[in-house]
Image (tube, rainbow over all chains, first blue to last red):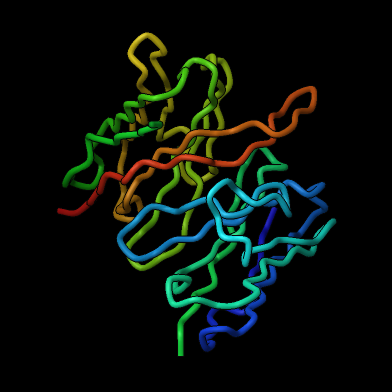
Length: 106
Length: 126
């Protein structure tokens, strides 16, 4: 199953709303997760099963979607959100990640 | 506190072998499936392999099938990745991750990776 994220990168100001899309090549029945990775650190789980916020993750992060189209939204971008974001499907036993979206602060 | 610690990375020549270990603490290891994910320099995340809680089911990405072997020793709270016939394209940071199951079918567990190790670096070069 292929995952295509868009955009590949985004530059936004503090306080802006940022939306990252993830399209899958097959219906994955909402088994779509989102991770945040900052340079030199391992990935961190943000959202699981499309829309469930992991414990400890700020509420400005949210996920939505169904079928083959999914979205990660940061409602009010903060400086500490500068990172690369990855979607991931585990619907198939052959797990795949999107190529990543780099979020930068203007 | 749940912790995962990878070890065993290093510099190896093309065609060589390495065995990575992931030693865990803070949760009941024998009840959790586990995964290996790698990241080549400057690149994105690539899932490599996964193993069920009991170790009786294993999965691999196509590029490592027949070359890498995932295993676990539940008595030692440790997962392994035996990597043989290494190639330059296997150069990466290798992360182990704990799988948290959120659903299941007759043959598959749906999960997310809720805890990650810090990674161990594998460099394949002559």
